[in-house]
Image 1 (cartoon, rainbow, N blue to C red):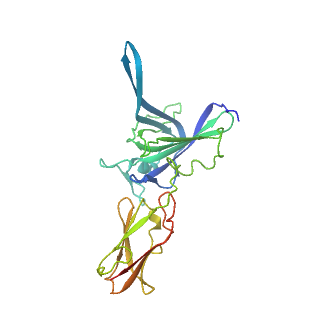
Image 2 (cartoon, rainbow, N blue to C red; image 1 turned 180 degrees about the vertical axis):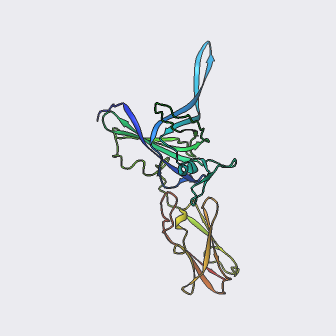
Image 3 (tube, rainbow, N blue to C red; image 1 turned 120 degrees about the vertical axis):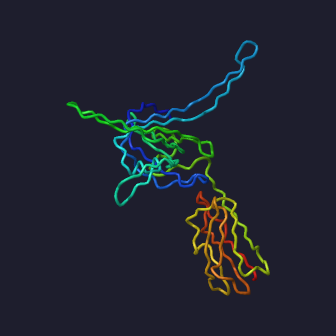
Length: 291
C-alpha cells in the first residue's frame, strides 16, 4: 500500500479533558472548546556535540519544554474556569480570579484537515495553560475582531509520551471518534490485578473491631468500589460496612459499621472489580476468618 501525501489545509474542533488524578493520569469526559483559529506547538530540543581529534564524534539530544499557543473565537467563563482553575458561581454566572488559583493539567486534542478531504488528529497528553492576557481596543469605522489568545506548556506523562497522532491516510485500523476520548498512553495493560487481604484466609481470633483490608497489585477503577463488589457475610447475612480507598486506589478498606459478633465470617471481593485499564480480577476473592 503506497504512502499517501497530502498537505494540511486547516484546523478545527479543539477539545479538552481535565486530568482528574495526576498520580493515575486519568481524565474527565472530553469537552468541546471554543472554535479554534490557530494553534502552535513548539517543542524545545537541546542538542550537544562532542568533539575529538578535531571532528564531531558524538551528538546527543534532549527534549525540554513544549510551548503551546492557541487563539480561539471566544473564551467563555465556563472554559476559563476549566482551563485556569478559577471559581465560577453557577447561580450568578460571575467568576472570581484569585491569586492562589491553580490551572489544572489537561489533555488537549484537535483536528487538522488535509487537502484530499481526510484529516489528521492530535492529542497532547499533559498541558497546563497560563493566565490569559487581556487587550482591548475601541471600535473604529472598520470592524476588527478581538480574539483571545492563550499560552501554556505541554510535558510528557509518566510513560514519557507527550503526543499521539492519527492520520486517516495512514495504514492501520480505520479511525473512529479519535477525539471522543483521550487515547491510552503506552502499551495496553492486559494483566489482571491480583489482591491480598488482611485478615488472611483461615485467620482466627480476629478482633471484633477489625477492618478487612484489600491490597491490589495495581490501581483499581474507583467506580467499582461499591457494596455490591465488596461485602461481608456472617451466616449468609450481609454485615453493614463502609468502604474507603487509599490514595492511588490500590488499597480498599472495608470496615463494619459496628463491632462484628463472634463467629465465622466471609469477606468477598467480586471479579467485577477492574484495574484502571479495565481488566477485571481473574476470579472472585473470598476470605474466611473467625472472630
